[in-house]
Length: 303
Image 1: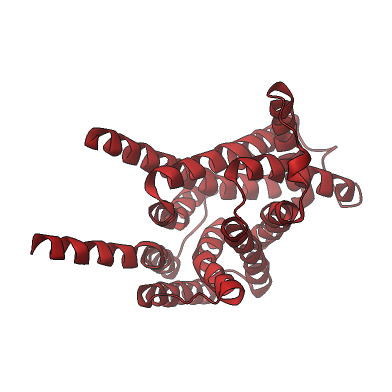
Image 2 (image 1 turned 60 degrees about the horizontal axis):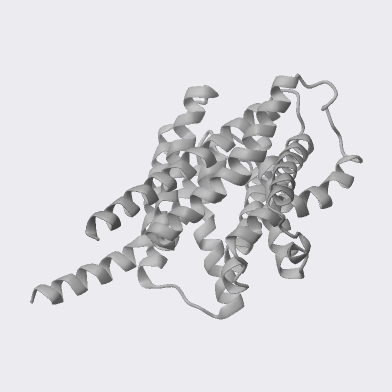
């Protein structure tokens, strides 16, 4: 039994690490695509159309009805994690460096979730979560004031993106939306919503190399929209939400390393300090309080 639990924990950690790599890679792939032929709207449209096609074919082969997806809570959560989040984050990414995106979104996410939960349910933070929030705010201040930091406009777009993904995260729990339902709903609802709008937005799709379109379609539409979501839900199932979310503290670090390798991004010492503080702040927010409670119970058990 213990051996089985250990295997579950290892597989959960590996799934969480896979999410870290995929999300960090998404920042790099998106930044690369935006610096070449494709626009923000092209990357968004390719993502949702590809994912929707895969999910739609899956529903046909498995005879799954799509009618239950079209309820107000599911539509709202889907748009927040889809079109609203993706467009805002891509605009912010276009205006800033890849490293900044990983720090700002992943750093502000716990704080934004805490604010939304407080307004919605009046739930307050623990003392260790306040420590985590202060560290995250310090990290973002250092990033913003560094020579390679984000501009105000980039920060605002990334802030908006963080709000939408935080609202999605909180609403999933409060509205009790099943992960299998949202995996089907996000691609289909956003494809239906965004595709008509895409026709009226600037596009370079006709001039982009097929290789770029295929890369964005496969990575954005399949790897990020489907594989990452599955790995995240698997990790939460095996480790619990707290432990799984703590692994996400690695995203800013990994995204910076990938940006340095693949985008030749220069990172200042102040940015490095900001990234480390941000990651530690996320860990404090997510895991420090449960860890202290565990140690307290363990100490009492030994006595």
